[in-house]
Image 1 (cartoon, protein in one colour):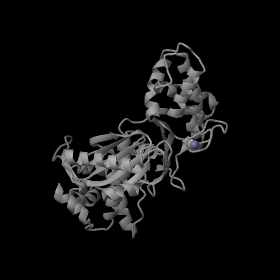
Image 2 (image 1 turned 180 degrees about the horizontal axis):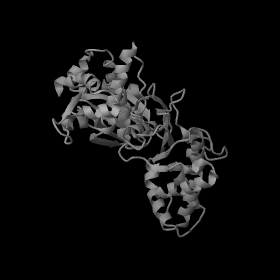
Image 3 (image 1 turned 60 degrees about the vertical axis):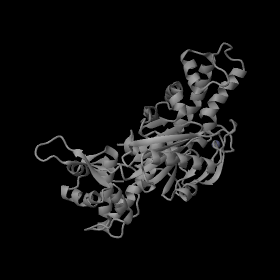
Image 4 (image 1 turned 90 degrees about the vertical axis):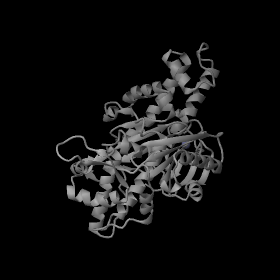
Length: 434
Ligand SMILES: [Zn+2]
């Protein structure tokens, strides 16, 4: 993790150290400047010098090879100040793009995203639940081909593909150990994509990918300790501790949905009983609603067993008896798990995202009130629960973040030698295209 004038500028500056201290310093400074451009958008070299604390000459020396190879291009001139107007530098979004793929239960979305997180175009495909991984990958690649054709892009312009998916995901190996809500077990998802694509692929847990995107472009920009909690068909988290995403020994850190809440609780998709998500993820809430209706509570309820979470939210606002019972009970479980997470990680705030958060805001409000009662006079009741950023929390943007970070690390390490850095053939290729 680097600091620029005391400001955190991103997460996971984790590239391996270069051979010498001097090379490593140049690599780190390159990465620092890349992250400033990635995080805050196009900017001038003078502004980069001011924000990084590096001298203007150092900034110029570091960036020149990337300007020459058109990794960085001029995007207008600065409008303020006297004298000569400075060039505003941006990543070349015509030549270097990433693709973000977000795989959900019945739909995958694919987007072309530049290195600054701007979405250029997107496409999606629907499929029945429990579709085989091969078929979902084929549909995602069809979407990508459609986008390439529509934008007159060659595959070589795609620096990498990031795939975000809920479940037990080992992001180091690209293995989906279990995506129980999709019915997938031990799927080598990264290999499935790479075999057909011929470009680097990174597979990441949806919650961790969103936390990473929040750290670059969203509400986590200036915060080293926070959580991004995804509540949908399951519950997963991206946990940022001291500026780094928590991955754990097996690469599956953040699977808070399987925290045991009550061993006598309902069955969880993981095979155990009473996990947090078995009480208050989307399917559990709808199951509770169906059971309450069956039990005959509130015979004049506007709800039925097929009602959506949006219907439930609307019914709660109209004081529907079943909706009130379902929301209050679900909120008690949601709050209980949140308190566990708060005590364990001591986050500055928790960002909430996912379909349940979007469709059922009354549940979030109810949980916030309950948390205060569960924590007594401890500090955890001060922890803000806030909605994640709309842009950064988009699954496809989050997916692309994982691969653009890695790409920038690789670019920075190429700039690790003093003097004239060696830029490889693929950069020369980009220069020719643009
Ligand atoms: Zn479980």
